[in-house]
Image (cartoon, rainbow, N blue to C red; front, side, top):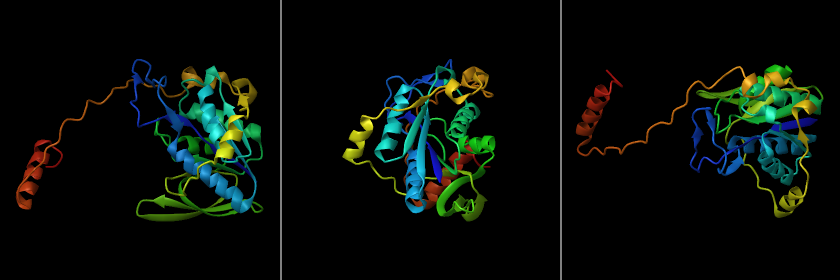
Length: 265
């Protein structure tokens, strides 16, 4: 069984995030970067699937040179193979262009059975890339997965639990499938020192647009179907107000304020 996991490098949300407002993009220079937190759960689920059902794991990441760091982390955690998808032509890609590149990489890898993705990235927070990959590849689409119950590679079937409003949905789907997982599906492990040292010496294979055979007119800012029309930074949040008094008085005061703000009528 061949397992692919998509991981992404994102700005550390604990740091101050700055925007290039005219271009509608993040200023990534000088900002510490980390692996997308949701992708840590996807990577762990790939490792658990290999442990339970055998197979090989291929980790891929689309991004500039610095994005190789997240792939080294994956190597330190013993994935079998990594590939960095990097090309100036990819800069500014929207979600569909990104999924097009990722899907092209999976076609190049070949014979993929399961693709694991995080529910969303913390920089874009769209949560649609996994679904777009599934659409482009013609794979089964399983979103908001909270548990992988079983994988039957021989009969090309997988059973998962999906977190839905008010409960859990059990779904059986055909393989190959793209699975986007939610936080808490597992407990991501940390690499050991030996793994980190070994990964630090390994060369990260890179695939360009030409290597993947993608149409450069369908990637990057110019090739993206969606455009950022305007971006604004919200004003700083003002100081709150502490209401004191008896519970009935406080409740009445809150209701009056909500009516004044036209939140309720």
